[in-house]
Length: 65
Image 1 (cartoon, one colour):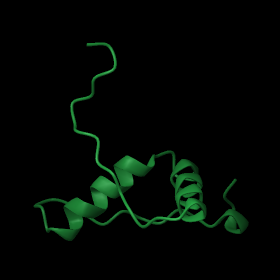
Image 2 (cartoon, one colour):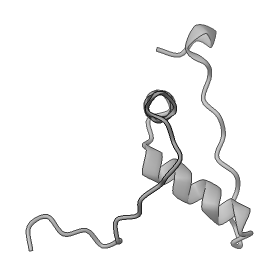
Image 3 (cartoon, rainbow, N blue to C red):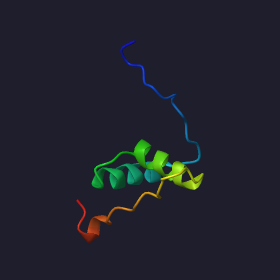
């Protein structure tokens, strides 16, 4: 099927629009995306072997775009 993904779509509740936008901008500055960072955080949080917490990108006023 054309628009089918390997993973199920997961919803996240309790995130206001501004936080979601800021998070998207921050992940883009790090050449990543929200899903990758959330997944990496979750793997680190549950202590999956070999996982490491995601690093924070530079703030926009610290050399980011």
